[in-house]
Image (tube, rainbow, N blue to C red; front, top):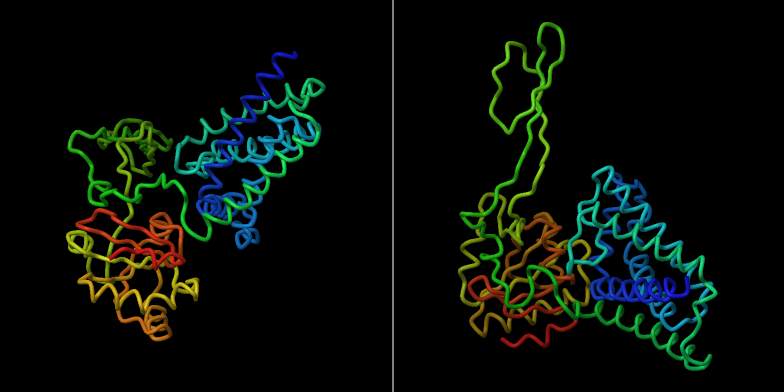
Length: 364
């Protein structure tokens, strides 16, 4: 039991620290995932959606801190029982999303590692077993250092976690794991190779044959049946190739201009997934940005999911004269974790990306 506890202690502690730091690197992304869980289609807790960011930061800071506490042996009973409560919660969420096919990616490791719902559930079950070993053998979890040093390390871990979470919220993630990282080409990210694997889909055809309902399963062709067609359902058996970028576009109400703008040599895109929620301080900086960009020979446009009335109101309020184009809100939240955020593109390649706090760092 003593050796099992030591192995479990190391595995659980390291995994909680890594998983927590990855999410803490992008707390906004994790908050979007929590909003998905809180939505009416999943847990039906919409009253929690406005607090998703606060809950996300608290959860990931607690996750990192518990991992540190466990490894150094700080307050072992509190730490182990807190880990148990947290893993029971995570296991319930991953089972719920897997069994009811509600959330396709739990967000356990942010954008760094995508797990299917059942993979996430399996991972949590393994962690649950390891933590139960810690509960049973908690007497073997002893501090590695004296009380003062252990307390100092615990405090430093807590302070660092809070500082790091605040820093990335005020700027951008320290490490960008998404398809829109600097150096990525958006055109290439949307391209599907000719020899890419196709999805395997099963079709379930329902017919009324002599007063009885009959279901025929195949891979697509309309079956030859002497009966009245009722309906057809499909199920993806095996996913095909998925490009890293699937929902990016630059559109007007009538026209798709994505290819045209991605061919521009010098393009500045101001991204605001919601102009209704745009940060006032960031919006105030856009007038100076547009003047500087145009003076340096850049074309500048905006991308938003907001409607025409809001676009005109924002332009008038902040003296903005560039045009806003349409893009899916979820895609824009993925492009840059800032509202507004700024991208510099050269023929579709992202050359610079900044939080509105760091507009002055743009090198045009």
